[in-house]
View 1 (spheres, rainbow, N blue to C red):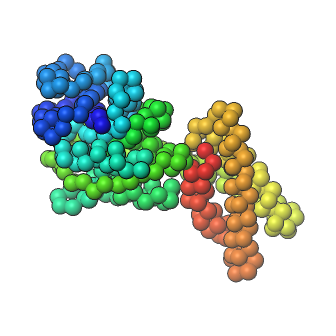
View 2 (view 1 turned 180 degrees about the vertical axis):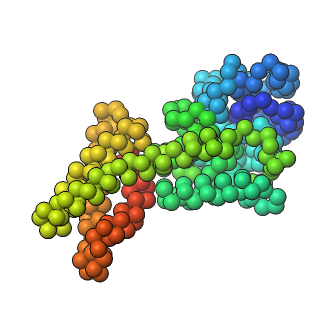
View 3 (view 1 turned 90 degrees about the horizontal axis):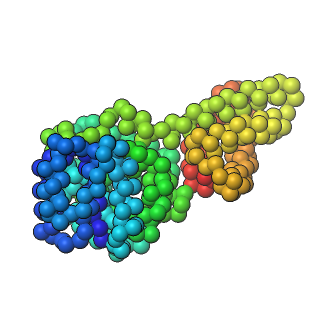
Length: 336
């Protein structure tokens, strides 16, 4: 295996981590200096002296880009069977790094996550942020992961080309990997690791507002697309129902119109699939999903409005809320 450590403005803990890893294993260690600057040169010189390869970005480009730089270097220069990625700020113990790396070499899973247990003294913002992100991810994908924000991850060599292609330059990159993996058939396994936070996680370069927005952006964009097409569908349904008094016809025509709007926005702006081949494949799957959701939509509306007597407007709102998460999960998993 190869150990890959992206690093921005590190302190003595990076050198200590390297020394501890060297005492446990002789595997190659690659460190990516993500534009830390001249004042940190002595630390990276110490890392080089310990036998590590140091790759340097002239300016800070973000954790996602640093990881991609490392992945590409390993593809070009190393025959390692697996790559284990770790943070440089002392939050991952050497024994856990080695354990995740070994698990990546032995397991049939494609991605191994070192999942923290969040026991003991954990900063409130870290505990809350991790729990919230995990719940949102689980609801959106249907895949249960306890620690979506862990930086300790292992990958087989066969995944490296794909890892270099997933969008994202900063902290959102690691969330994008988890969102994209199920759609590409990659399996995920979690391995429990120690939860380590030093000085209330003050050394973290994570920007709570800016980076959180990037992490949630795929779901936020999908929500915006769904709201816009939902409004179109809602208005068209009311107009057609008023004109024809035929609920089935109104649902079919309204859904057909809004589906064109929704598909176009999702393909271009949410899931970013714009090649001709991906369009043909995704369009076929999308409209198969549209047919399924239209049937579910009509069934729910009939139950609420026709059988139970709920007024059309609240019945429509309740139906769309029920189908929203199912639609996101299905499109992420099967369509795009």
